[in-house]
Length: 112
Image (cartoon, rainbow, N blue to C red; front, side):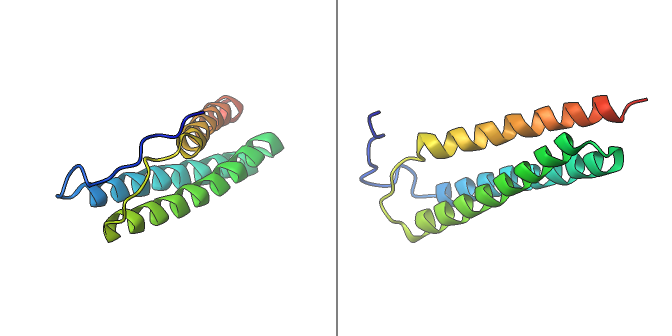
């Protein structure tokens, strides 16, 4: 797979780095909240599969937080950086889908 083109100069001298960091923070926060809700649903219904999804989502949220901090620091220093890797973006998309599936499963199992 071809690597994305390397940025040679900032495209936006304004607040792009801050906006990118905030976007990663919002994504990680949403993942944490979903992980806590799914874990709560799994524990309260004694369904191990839902609890496992919650734990995996919690670990994914930690990973998204770490990537976001790393990316924000890189951008705030003004380093010349590559575009976000497809692997990183794919992992976040997969964690988002996992969160959606876990939320749906917890609602189905939790309903009378």
